[in-house]
Length: 117
View 1 (cartoon, rainbow, N blue to C red):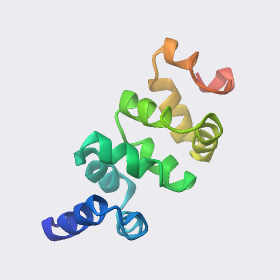
View 2 (view 1 turned 90 degrees about the vertical axis):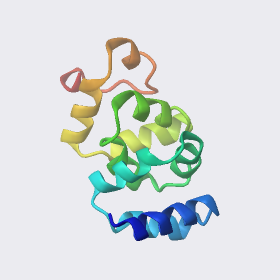
View 3 (view 1 turned 30 degrees about the vertical axis):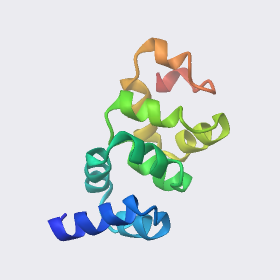
């Protein structure tokens, strides 16, 4: 991402123009979007994450460090957490769940098949 685009996106987020910020973030591949997202202060990450559509949140979260992703997921409702996890591709979901420590599994809102663990 070029610095001008990054600054434009940061400005949109700081002014809470969530729709325009999401539109710009969707133009990036999911890895670049996650890199940009991780560079934001955590309070902005959490606030923006709450406004992301479930499918986009699912594509973004798998590129974040597992604990960070886990904390952001738990900042949403149980129903939203499940929807986000279910919106992940099978391979992304498997990779995400495999990265979680065993104790984190117990805190997930739904039981997922043991084959994913």
